[in-house]
Length: 322
Image 1 (tube, helix red, strand yellow):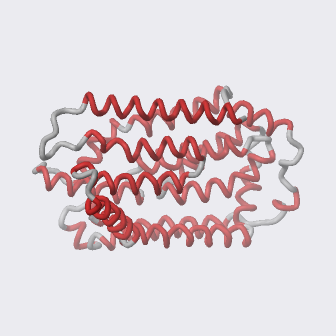
Image 2 (tube, helix red, strand yellow):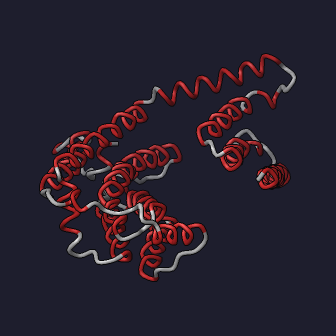
Image 3 (spheres, one colour):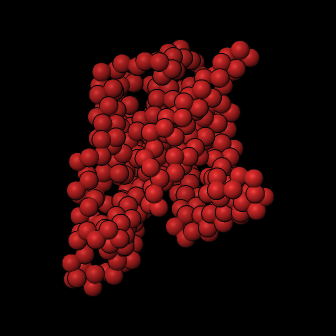
């Protein structure tokens, strides 16, 4: 075991060093607008440390600190003032990120979604949906396909999709011996790609705002929504991941660690759906709140963009908010 850890660490350090050397050698001549070659170090450091330590928060924290130091220290590596300024820069950016209104809204939004899910479970709404779905789900493949379709239908937000679809489909996939790893993969592989392609989603609203700012800065005579449609066909990850998920489910071919997880789930006697957990429940108790959630999302975007006045000025539903 110790030798495996040492081997993994050595391989990770070698890859880290090789990539840094390549970045330094292949970087163009540094000008006032050109990023320095060592700008690759923070994200690369986060990946390597996460691979070695298996602690994501610690790895990200070290990478953030390294990024702050690299903004000041390379200019004067022997200066204590430069090091102190680097630590100060890190603190400023962390505080600015924590205090950002958009980030705070996300932190408030996610717990409320969890609260809503718990209420839907307690009211029997999810049990009602599960009972309805069980009329059509007859095996592991159809359970996976139903999970993917639910991920496509829950397009308004990637966080919401992961929470709702995962909570709703877990009893069904457990019943048909689909591993929790496969459920997590299907949920993740449909939530983010769908939110990145949907015409109306919280992520697209944020992205349209960024694209609009960039267009104004570089002098492109297009709004953010137009740029989003121009780039839609180039979202290769989103398109290919969705295609892979459905083709993977239909062909029923697993490989690597996922194949091992599916074998363990198929042989396990501990994962099963308790019959008493789905005997009662009304699907309407979940469908009405979920429909209300989508309606409030769309209405909020519309009102933030000026409502009827914004539409009369030629804005679009999502771009109005920005």
